[in-house]
Length: 374
Image (cartoon, rainbow, N blue to C red; front, side, top):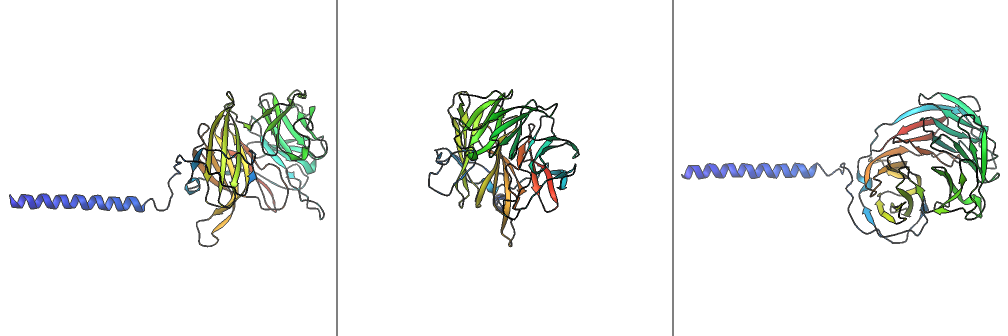
């Protein structure tokens, strides 16, 4: 009987020891923070800090959810690859670059992706749009009529829209089949007394909008070229699934804090406000858009941690994929940041099916690349 008790005691002791070792292993396996970020509910802080507008007016700090560990998740590099390499120049497979001594250096200002998956680059220095197919080959060019175009976007039917906010002060509407000018919509008017403050061109259905100072969007007309005399406003960028208007702004650049707001399009009521604490210094927001399913793509430029002793950080873009219903982080990826001096307007475009296309500039030319964060 006594021997049996001793045997049971030994077995129980071994079980306890095994459980203790398993607990130690489980704890040590989470020290590197390589698991995906787990957002927690909380109050969005309202402390004043450095701000950088990016789709939302400064001062839109509201109570909402906080996502404190977003930058701790291991960045994904899924589905990344080079689409095309184009050198500097004016040839068929080149893009213009200018570095004048007494003016701002310029490179291709903007890009967009058509419903067919072709990339269209605004090569304003050569006075044209350059269309690149999915195989990386240049399919053709379309001449531009404006003097200082800075942004290009595309409608669902393939219609191209090119904005010149400085001289012509209009949005040109270009037929997708013929490449001819279908009409022009004036920028200046109610809601936009000064066109230099326009920060983007957007299309929602048949409506053409321009963004005022990273805040509200003003409807200036439709794809037929008919100007909107009422110039109605919407509170943010429309998502492609038709559910929301989205806005974002940095509330503390040094502390790595920013907010994303979503407004329900049917009710015009707040859907959610979520704060993201990225734990690295922020420079500016490079992207705020959605794909056809409604997934939100948020790109933030900053001093990204390298995970190495030296250098401890380097400039880059962290790309987040956010859930359309509550803003939860679905995934993230780190991308290179353009650090050359050339002035540009839009370096990223979201694909309808998901993922992004972006341009990375080097001394040799422009590399068009694809990436995803889902």
